[in-house]
Image 1 (cartoon, rainbow, N blue to C red):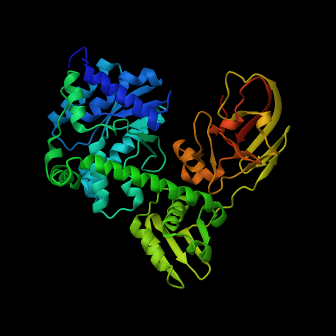
Image 2 (cartoon, rainbow, N blue to C red):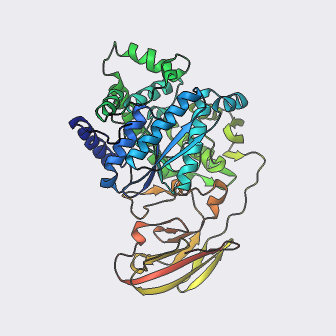
Image 3 (cartoon, rainbow, N blue to C red):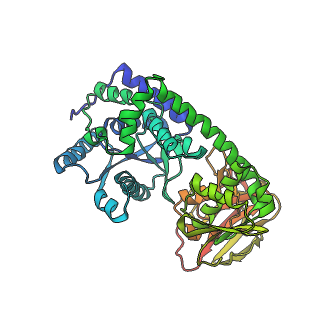
Length: 479
């Protein structure tokens, strides 16, 4: 490993392309801490090197994460780790490492090696992200990887969501966790290969990627080359298909977001739809309602297009029952459709309470106090308190639980975000999300206690403020 990493007009141009892509796609948020997944191959080596070179432009803090799946020989695995260690040392990026026996897990859980490896790798990366207080894990997925994933989903009969594979920024695939960032999604693999060569790097090679033992390998080595005989630019065509599917998928989700609150009656243990009103929606919107209901009740339960089709088919019967993943059941009666978690009863949710200013409100296990303040915003604000601009409050303050369809624009972000995603990103367990106090006014959420302040509530200049503090019984408060 050379002590000084080289550069060339090509590498500098590619650095600029990735920086422009990241900014255009909001792939990485300026100022955040990012765990960079580095296997030692050309794509991940390029990812780490590019991010180290543009980190200053974005104000990023980087931590590299290397995971050994224990599938390669010991000498190959040790060589991978040494390569990554030396690269991190040259770039002055801290490194964390981990390993797990993927083959043993696959045998134990009757999973494919691909699935077992992915789950264990993401478990490691998610754990290290939480330790580093990182809000994103960056992966070295390229345009070619995206094309392979689209084809994989086509072969599996995926729906529209599956076709919109690998977005530049996505939620964590296994419950709560950081978001996934894919800064190299606009690059081809031959470009990452050249980037490494021009930088003086000799990345590691995993020969199992060339063996026809996994479905993805066969798509990469057999199917895509065959398709290129029909269209030499099939990779770009598949990426355009994914982009088009993502646009349509987003539109349908927005329609479902708009009507969810009026249609669904949701508690922690069940979601109920009026059958007649539900049946009046387009099947595409019905599918989104069902997926959201499963996520609301089952947390990490994920419905496939096949499960949704079963429920839609069952609507033709007067009464029916469909088993869903994660122990969920869809019961269809003459008047109602109910998605529920078998064997659990809904827990009572804390009622809505007024929060006087000045004054306090008891809300479940929490006590919230509010008082008027004037002057400048303190330099340090604890996680259990918030300062809200007095002029931002519309009507009176109140405290409530989350509701289906809740959204807000968190401080520092350009657009609105689902409350569900905010709580997931913060690592709040699914069973505790209904117990997070929301300080609201007549226009919506002002503060998600202990998590995020709404952009519209921010104190911009000295003046009138409302100081709100949330204390939970049995929990020590920190500043």
